[in-house]
Each structure stands twice: as C-alpha cells, then as structure tokens.
Image 1 (cartoon, helix red, strand yellow):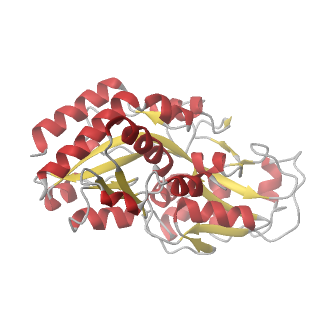
Image 2 (cartoon, helix red, strand yellow):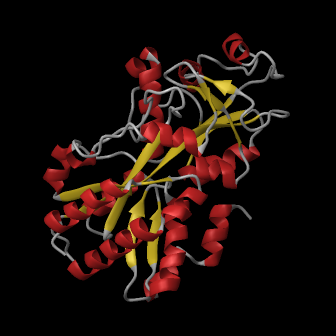
Length: 336
C-alpha cells in the first residue's frame, strides 16, 4: 500500500470527517497533501477537530475558494496581488518543498542519472525521444542507457506542481518559454496525462522507460527513481533537504506583495533548481467566520508544532520570522 493510499485508508483526511461539526474544509494542491495529512492526524488527536482536505490540484483549489465552497484553498502557484484584490482573498506560504524528475529505467538507481534544464525541456517538448540520445549520454557517460522510446508522463489537471515545473523549464530553455510557456495548465507537446502527484507517481511506477515530475515526498514514499539535476550555478545536486533549504534561503518574503515568491532556479552552488512553496488562500471576509477561525487555529498550530513533521517528509518549514509576518497578516486582513 503506497503512502497516499495508506493515509486515505487510515481516514486521516477522508470525506467521512464531515460528520464532525468542527471540521475544517479545504481543497487544492496535491503537492502538500502528505504533510497536510500528517498534520491533520496529529491535530485531530490533540484537539478532536478534523481536516477535510480534497487533494484535487491547485487549479481546483483556486476555483473552490473563489466559489466559497471551502474554507480555504491551496495552490502551489501563488496568485498575483491584482487577482487577490479582485477576489477578496488573502494568501500566504504554508510550507516549502521540491519537485523532482522521476524515471522508470531498468537498472538505473535513484540519483544515478543526471539531467539539466535544457535536456529536460527537450524531453518534455518531444525533441529528445530516446533514452540513449546524445544529450542524455553526455550528461551520463557511466550510466547504461537503453535505446528505447521515452514515455513522458505529465499532469492532466490544473496543477501548481506543473506551474513550478514549467516555470523552471521556461527559465532553462528559451525554446520552451517561447513555444509552451508556464502555467497550471499548458499545451503539452507530448506525453500521457495523469491526475495529481498521486496519478503521476502511479503511472511512472507502472510504465517502463517513463519520465515524469512529482513533489519529492511522493518520489520517496512510492520508492520512485529520482534524478540528480544540474542547477543554475552549473553544479550537479541531489534532491536533499540541504539542497532544498539552500534554494529556499534566497526567498525574500518580507518585501513580496501578497507573499508572491517563486523559488525555481535560485542561485547558489547547493540549490535544488525546482524548489517551490505551497500557499493557502482564504477570503478576507469569510461567509462562515467560525469556520475561518477554526482554520486559522489549525494553521497556527501547524506553524507552531508541525516543523519536525514537515522535515520528516523532506518539506521545509517556514522560518519563524516569516510565520510572525503571516500571523500579523491574519490579524489585519481576515475578519474571522
């Protein structure tokens, strides 16, 4: 049983939790689902209050919070200040993590294969179609690469993971930027679609000679073969907490209107190039003020008590100084 299925089976974040009056409702990004689930279980044991979080993708989370069908939305693509103001929303980062390319190639071990941004863009653009292509061989002279067709797996739903991945590819490849671009949904040149980080993980594990991209916790929990990456400084880095923290350390949350910060392709020899934040969205004037107050209690608890749990799943907790800023934002901007 994989990690995500185990969570659902254990009933930590299940629709049945709506039977409890104090439950908090949210929907959106699949990127933070593992850590939100872990927090939800601990919070329920401590307080008796549950979290009903639907892992439906960032696009779905934005739509649901705009429609006021949930107390909070979750997105790995931050909304710009203009959109927040138009929709009466408040946004803040909840936790940081990383996106990793994952492959299923016989004989290739996790971290053994190296890719760079340009090569990754060419694979997802359909320019590189076989594993023994000269560009991949140049990066991997000692890896035994098969002369087989590459099966590209990408998201089919509106996805903040896709936003960050395509944002990175746009920075790494001028051709990708000009022809495909970035977004929660893009016109993919090639590949088969799968829903959520869960769907991509499952598809990769079942499809020989495939490549996809998932949040690192999914790669780890599903025992997928992740690749190393050449970062913006030209250094080969493995996906480790230290590499994610190196990228995250560049974030300037204090001067970012609406906490709009993108963490892809950060400078530094040790930085993982596809690092990302995941964000919470709530209405400034919630329809159900009691529900909004309960949600803020959960988020406050998660900031205060959830750091170690986040680190255990290779997420990066928000720094204390940023948490203080966020709590001031709650006090001034949300009428709960």
